[in-house]
Every structure is written in structure tokens, then in C-alpha cells.
Image (cartoon, rainbow, N blue to C red; front, side, top):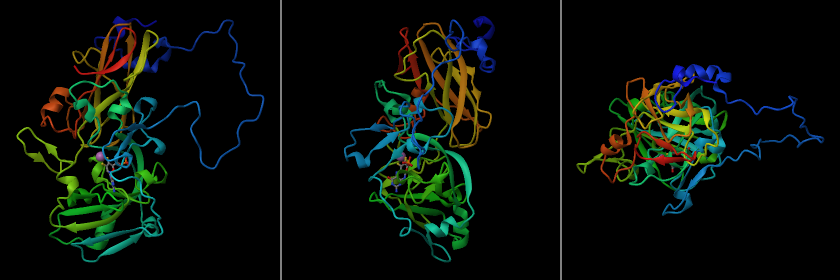
Length: 414
Ligand SMILES: Nc1nc2c(c(=O)[nH]1)N[C@H]1C(S)=C(S)[C@@H](COP(=O)(O)O)O[C@H]1N2
Ligand SMILES: [Mo]
């Protein structure tokens, strides 16, 4: 048994991280069998045959949670990654969140082209096959919609899962051609400052990206977690702008125009701007701020025993790597540092974990991420206070989950 006084690192049952290395000390354990014997469960018949493309176990209930009720119909909707049912930091392609403004087009890669034009010395056009011949890079990156978690800006907390509330974020290994190869080849003119990207879907989605950013880590992505992009993620090619709001990672990418000014398109004037309290709006606020969410225990879960649990979650920041994540079990009064996965990468989802003993008390669990630039994830109140009450993009406030005495876990505001 754990002597809590020896191992406590903060109030409310948070325990020292070294206990994670000593599972026997946690006292979780399998059920004890008496008399002790090996399991006697095996199959008497051959199982199913191999398959061409694998499917998850029929016992694992994995689903993207659908955001219903979009006024323009399901083609203009989104679906979120079920954060509470996953672990690690890679989102399987079938569960990557989706956000489409005009549905998922079926694009034939033998017909599709990417045109690079505008203030360049030579206009270039690339087929899918052309792009496959370029040197590529692979990186783990998160992708987050700037509308993620917008329901936590509502006046009353909604009783939803971690995925429904915060799952417009996913993590994947993205592989593609660094955009600067193509820009170098086209020869960007000296006076150019922006790149305007356009998709081939019916949404006519057009976004402007500062040239300095476009020359940095931006990819024309062709592969996602090792396989060609899924249609929902932009097959055959998408722009991928690491650390920035998902909207500028234009899917079904068909043109890039180099110019002196931004396009001031619908998607960067009427939408995807941040309304401030004085009535003005911030434009081109592209970087996603430091954020984290506890994925277990989380909304709509039920703890059905007292004892030690692993609190676990995800943290990310558009400013770089996650430096640390602090966890509170008493609604933000006392905090303890969680363990980060050992290979935390910049601009990627980072897993954190910390042991916690639940003794049946009401507890409010929170996580607070700090990135390598020293940015600290704000409380809900501070996050909301930055914008007009009508604003909802770029919400990164601390998520609170309340565990009540009956073990029910619920989204709360503190
Ligand atoms: N062409 C095009 N690109 C697009 C969109 C779109 O509707 N059309 N949606 C954008 C938005 S708002 C987001 S958050 C991301 C979502 O990418 P995903 O569906 O691969 O998760 O794609 C962006 N790129
Ligand atoms: Mo988005």
C-alpha cells in the first residue's frame, strides 16, 4: 500500500511521479485468482483470414464525435478525435479530426495539379507525380482548428466528453515536400511578402500566409502517418503549416500565389479573426497558443473504484516544445509537475502523466501547460477576458473536470 503522506506532491491526492515507475506500489493490480492458475481461455477454431486493409477490433468502440446542427448542413460541419479513448500522441488517420467547409471532394491525382504563380520569376505547375519525385521530410506535428474548445466559452459548462469539447486537435506524422524547395525553384521576387493558398473544393477556401512563415517549416504534405493523405485530410495534397490555426493548412491544395499583400479573403476577414473588446478584430493571429487537456479521467467517465489512477493528457503549443505540465486535483490551489513523455517534440502533441489517489472525495482536476518560450496556459477566465464576448476562436483556457463523490466526471467551470 502507498503511504500517501510520503508520496503526496500536492493536495487532493496527487502523488509523486516515481510511483509510475513502480506499478506494484500503486496497488492497482489485476484481480487476484484463488487458487492461482493460468487463464484457460483459448479459441478452438481458426480465426478470421488476413485482410487487405486492417480494421480496429470490433470490441474497441472508436468513433469520431460528430458536431451536429451546423446551419449549412453536414458538409459544412466537423468531427472531433475521441481524445478520451486514445493514448500516446499519434491520432490514427481514421480518427483524425475533420473540418470541411464544403464536404470532402473526390480528387483524381492524375488530373489534379498545383500551380505556383504571381510574383515569381517562372510560373510552375506540379502534378502529383512530379511532387512525389522531390526530397521529402517527416515530422510529428499537431493540427488544431482555431474553433477548438469554443463550447467552453459558453456561459454554462456542457456535460460532454474530452473529445466533444476539445477534440478538434489531432497529432500525426506528416510527410511532404518542404515548400521552400518549390519557392526557390520558381524564384520569388524581392518585393513579395505573402503566399495565397487556394483549395480545389467547392468552399473556395483561400488563405494568406506570410512569406517568412512559408519559407520556414511549411510542407506540401502528401503522407499522413505513413500512408497517402486521406480524402478528408486533403488527398492528394495539402498545405501543412505547423503550429498555426488549422484553417491555413489548405486541403486539396491547387494554387499558391506569391504577392506583396494578403488576399483579405472571406476566411481571414469575416471569419478566423479575433474580435476584441474594443470592437476591433485581430487579423492573421495564426499561431496556436499553449494548451493542454486531461484526457483521463475526463468528461462522462465514471470512476468505479477508489484508489490510484493515472491522470493523463495531451499538451501542445504553436510556439514550440512543451516545457512542463502541471496538474491540480483541487481546482487550481495546489499544483504538481506531471511526467512528460521522454521524446517530446516541438509543435507536436505531448503526453503527460501523474499518479493520483481518489479516496472518494469531490475533486477538480486541471492541467496547465507551459511551453519552451515560457508561455503559461491561462485560466478560463483570463482566456475569455482577452476577447469580446462574441469571440470564440483561439480559446486555450484550462479545462476543469470535476469528479463527484459517486465517481461521475463532468466538465465544470471554476
Ligand atoms: N480546401 C480546404 N482546406 C481546409 C478546409 C476546407 O474546408 N477546405 N478546412 C480548414 C479548417 S477550418 C481546418 S481546422 C483544417 C482541418 O483539417 P482536417 O480536416 O484535416 O483535420 O483544414 C483547413 N483546410
Ligand atoms: Mo478550423
